[in-house]
Image 1: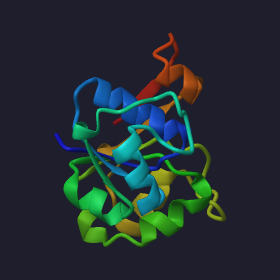
Image 2 (image 1 turned 90 degrees about the horizontal axis):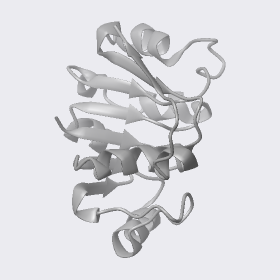
Image 3 (image 1 turned 30 degrees about the vertical axis):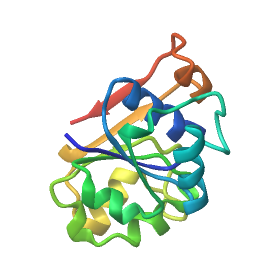
Image 4 (image 1 turned 180 degrees about the vertical axis):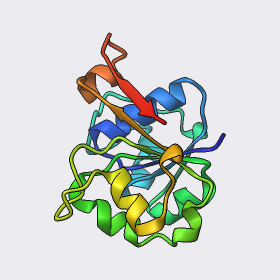
Length: 156
């Protein structure tokens, strides 16, 4: 299974660390080409969780969410909810077909009073059975440091 992650904040960085530590190749959309270049040369995110280092041979980095959707079977969305609609609406709905969507987004879709799964169903007809959620009550630094923490993973 090809796994994609969209988002390079502290939570996204921690989740990518978990995936790569378990030897999964990850297609990772980060904020900009400058961040891509930094991670490739320095092996860490320049903006978040500086102590987390990556095996960059397991990363396919880009700054284009559509590219991550195209290249992945399952996509973990981990961006602030304020940017959710802008990011998802820019993607060709055909790219979503057959994908597993894993939300690590905190909050609701702004101005819609909807959870992300409801928005995807309404806008794109995205099936609930292909939608999953991962949530805390943990902190990204705890997850990245491999400290005992609790995560909930849910789906139909």
